[in-house]
Image (cartoon, rainbow, N blue to C red):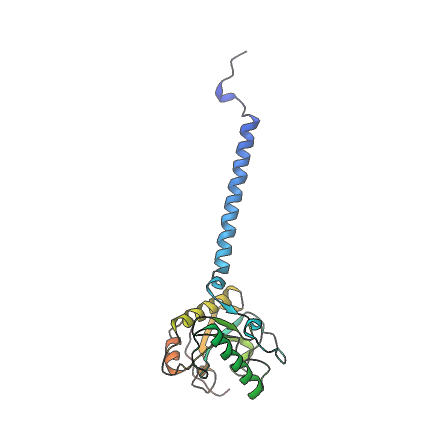
Amino acid sequence: MAEETKGNRKPSKKATRSVLVGAVVSVLLVTGAVLLIYFLTTTSGESELTIITRAEWGARPPKSRANLTSPVPYVIIHHSYEPDVCWNRSQCEKYVRGIQNFHMDTRGWDDIGYNFLVGGNGDVFEGRGWGVKGAQAGPDWNNRSIGICFIGDFTDKLPPKEAITAGKVLIQLGVDKKKLVANYTLYGHRQVRPTECPGNEFFKLVTHWDHWEPRNYTAE
């Protein structure tokens, strides 16, 4: 019988198992890397934000609520005018509670009007939240927009950089969560209602933000 050459030898069971184990490990590593990238890209916005929930800032329960059909096509930017800028969480929480009391007790609304509020320190406060119709831009806009209020009077000054950054991250988070359409349109409050909101200086800046579109308010 001819001598068996090395090239004709069948691989051993041990070698076959090693190849299979290596292949399985490679697949698991690739899968893990893909999942990690997905997790990082889908949670990065949330990790960059401090969002204070209604329970955390001591919100009163709403009298009633109506759901929004998501994703919505508009973002409306506001300033509170009064109170002015808050600089830490406890001060901002106090201001947000005051805004809710004013909206509910003086204006007779069902809840705080805005979907979110942004403090001067960059903390974001949940108002009505993503999926709830606000009372912030009038009947023609409330059911198709997210209203974001920057706490402070920005008639002749800008919000702190921390607040501006947080507001932009919040908007992108809305897109990532499919609460806003990817090609949303951004307006200042004065573009949809007869008001000076969000303040002259701030509005000048807002006109340079992504997705802002020119529009002049006309009675509808």
